[in-house]
Length: 363
Image (cartoon, rainbow, N blue to C red; front, side, top):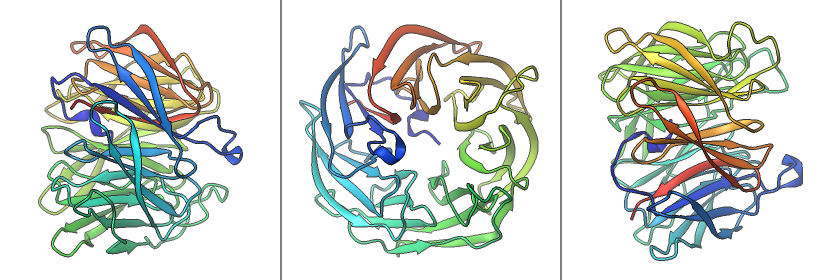
């Protein structure tokens, strides 16, 4: 789930871009990049880059927007930084061991007390210290199960995302290695993840569930499946923390016969339209959402004007969508039509090495 889905009318002052930086990833990134945003035009201007630890591939802000946290691909560390509110520049604060070797996502809980990390083989919780730094993890959970059929991608447990539901009481974990979506209850008093009952829902064998997003006002959730390029719709029980699937829809047109791997998913704050990205078809899939049933229907596909859109997000007021094209080293801006869901290129293309995540600061 993309953190910018909660709408605010505040204009962003800065954009922070996570990236890959290493030769192993064939990357050109130089660290977490900072861009200033002109409040009148929306144009981005490069400010600085902070390269504390390689591959800061996923980032998030704390609730006060005074601190930034980074997950690192091919690494066993998670990092914290302070933010200069005037310049937007980052200063490295500290790092902790994750108990894993290839983190994918990082989030802060609603109380601003806990940082949640998908570590590669597991999920970890880190306490936030008074200075914004991270303490050692208080819990590390490694899911159990039989890997899926694609041994190059599914050699064991691999939570590619760990995210809070909209109540903040549950942690939902799509595991691309085990073809399952795990659900935990957050014990915020002890810093523990408690398995729900049932503890998981199965995805299709070999689907490789990657990321999940929640409807802003209805009891629905949507998962993008990487390998079979589909979106699954689920009923979401906020009392029990249980997912029940009820629909499966492709992320590519029926006329597309090439290779594809789906990546990111997000929903408008209105709940009327859902988006998913395609690496191969090189597009953002657009779906209309029926508020009464939660069913989704394809409403079109918008080319991302680049290669491998690993990530995309909405800006704070959801008026624009930004597609991060990892292999063409660009972030492409689109206007969002709130009535039709359609995406319209604005003409702004930000050049930055191997972008994989974008977050906005409004303060």
